[in-house]
Length: 291
Length: 114
Image (cartoon, rainbow over all chains, first blue to last red; front, side, top):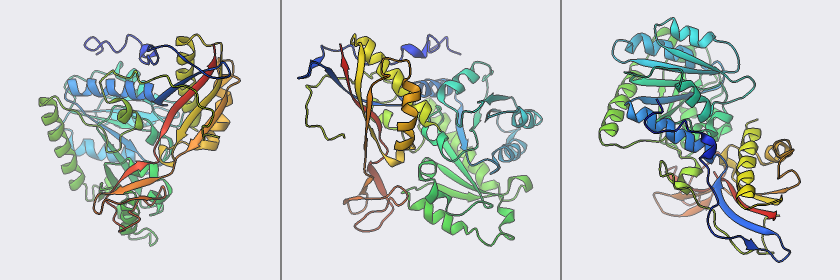
C-alpha cells in the first residue's frame, strides 16, 4: 500500500525540526531554541499518512471508543449483520490481550485484524499503520477501528480516522461526559448503548447525558440503541450510510476530513503539508514566567 | 498512563533538536499543557525521568506551564474563562463556543549546552 506515497521509508525521518539558521546564544553561554511543536507531532504525521491511504482507496475510517464493555464489538456485529450485503467492511481490533474480538468479527465473515497492545492503553497511528500492512483493503467501504476500551488515553491519539464515535452504555453513569471531557469532546457521534436496559435502570437519564455533552460545547448527535437485540439501530445505520456517501463525495473532490476535534498539531502545522519546520531561534530572556 | 508515551515522543523531539544543533547536554525543556489535552501535568512530571534516562536530556529540568481553559462564544462573541467540563459562555451561558485555549500539549522551548 505504500508504493504510492512512500510513507514506509521510515517514520523516524518525518520530524525535521531544526535546519534553519544558527543558534541564539544566551548570556550564560547556553543555547536556546523556541520550538512550538505539538508533542504528538510524529503520531499526527503518521495519522495523516493513514488518512491519505484511506482516501486513496475511498474508505471511510471510523474510530470506536468507549470504556471496556460498553458494547463496541456487539455494535459491530449488529452493523455487519445489517449492512454486510450493502457495504464491504473491515475491522481493526485493539485490545491488551486475546484475539477474541477479532474472532467474533471473523465469525461474521468480515476480515478483522487484532492488535494486541500488551500493556498499552490506547492505539496510536503507528500501530494502525502496521496493521494496515497486514490487511487487504481493496474494495473496502468502511474500516472500523475498535480502540482499546478506555475513556482516557485513546482520545489523545489521532489514528487517521475520519470520524470518532464514543459509546456510552446506560449501565454506566449519565454524567460520564462531565467526568471524561477530553473523550466526549472528541466524539462526532455519541451512541447510548444497551438502551433496552433503561427500563430496569432508574439512574440513567439519557437527557442528562446529552446535557453534560452539550456543556462540552459539543454539537454531536446522540443516538440510543440496543445492538444485541437490534433495537433502534436504524438511525445509526442511516448515519453510517450518509457518512459513506459523504466520504465518496469528498474523495471525488480530493478533500479529506478529520474528526471534529483536531489535535493541536494540525493547527500548528497543517495536515499533509509536510511543512513542519516551525522551529525558530529566539534570544534568551531571563525573565520568563515558566517556573 | 499514556503520559509515558507522550514523554517518549517529547524525548524523541528533544534528541533530534540536540543532534541537529550539536548539543552535548539538554539543560531545560519548557512545555505548555492544557487540561483538555488529555495529559495530566503531575503524571507527565513522573513519567519524564523514565523517558529521559540514558538520553541527552537525562539531566534536563522540565518546566510545564499549565494553560487555562478559555472559550469564545459563537453567539455573543465574548471570550471567557471556563472549566474543562463546562465549556459554556461565561457571559450568556450558551454552549455554542469554540475553544481559545486549554487543549495545548506543546514543546515551546529547549535550552542546551553546545
